[in-house]
Amino acid sequence: MRPMHTRTVRGPAALLLAAAALLAGSAPAAAQSLLASRGLGYVNPPIDGRARALGGAALALPGGGLSLINPAAISALPAPAITVAFQPDFYTSSLPGQDSDGSTARFPLLNAVFPFGTRWTFSAGFGSYLDQTWAVENQDTLSLPGRDVAIVDRFTSRGGVTRIRAGAAYSFTERLSVGVGGDLYTGSVRDTLSRRFARGDTVPGSTDLLATSYTTEWQYRALGASLGVRWVPTDALNLAASVTAGGTLEGRPASDDDSVSVGRDYTLPLTFDVGASGRVTPGALVVLNAQWAGWSAADEDLARVGGARDSWMVAGGVELGPSTPEERSFPLRLGARYATLPFRWGPASADAAFPSEKALTAGLGARLAGGAAQVDLGGERGWRGGGDSVLDESYWRMTLSLTLLGR
Image (cartoon, rainbow, N blue to C red; front, side, top):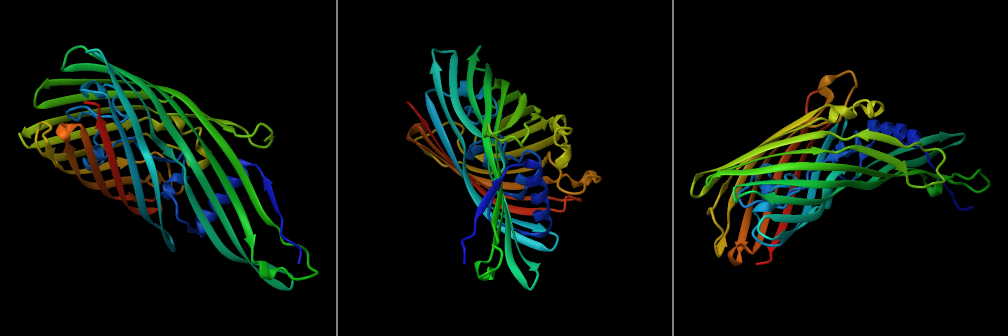
């Protein structure tokens, strides 16, 4: 028996068609949410465990924060600080005639802040943006003259787009500050379609059966900017707003000698966020956020894979705990979120084929050493899909973040 060989062919059109065929009749393998396979991927905001536990409301939290939503929020931090977040994710997916589950883990946020004088604060960090990690696999039988051959077809996509930000905030007063951020969106995605044949089905003297793989690798790059404001009209009320422009995301083949793949450009959305938080009692804080993202600007760019629509989100929560950092405090948080998602999953003729997402959230925090060390854990139980989107998913997601202040 002669060994099997592997050949690699590059071409995004073939990959897209093959992936669509696999999704229509195969069992998804362990990976990120299957929504990562639509449009430009699954949109995952770069926020910490405190915001996750409050439904995802990160914009107007008292004491500021290091999430990459409002560039003015860093002005409220009293000292140099660094935060890092870790996020495991478990999902169960249901498609017509099949069920599957999977898991993944990521670091959605790393950010550092450096105050300079009494009015300026600078930051540098990165966070998650578009996740395109997923996989599907299908086992079947291929009928050849005189025999049947067992085959396994598999499509894998690994990678996504990350946001790298350098920011600055200026405090006009202790109650009013503005911030700006320069964003570099960068990343790569490697797509591979492979077919494997059962080794025992290759018989002596017959024509070799070739294990075949098709691979493309894409690199993405875009420049963007953010502007935010933070206003504290009273000790009990925080207001904030931000706007982010993502520019044009350029997708290019990773290899210069790839003469088959053709680069494509995608318009990233203009995104508006508004938020408020109010202390209704000395031990209870209420937080509300809303977001609108103009993803329909990319509808024509993504027409061949289902298109895009504008999306919106509302989130809110309650934090129970002291209003100022103490030697030791352990705030409890509860929240909820509802969002429409930007990329279609289902028949192109059905407006209801765009999925939505809803989640219930909860979490705990720990404020240690007078607030110099902060640990936040946020948990989510969520559901995605609905309408004519065909796909239904439920998920558990945890976000653990650690923040250290250089006091």
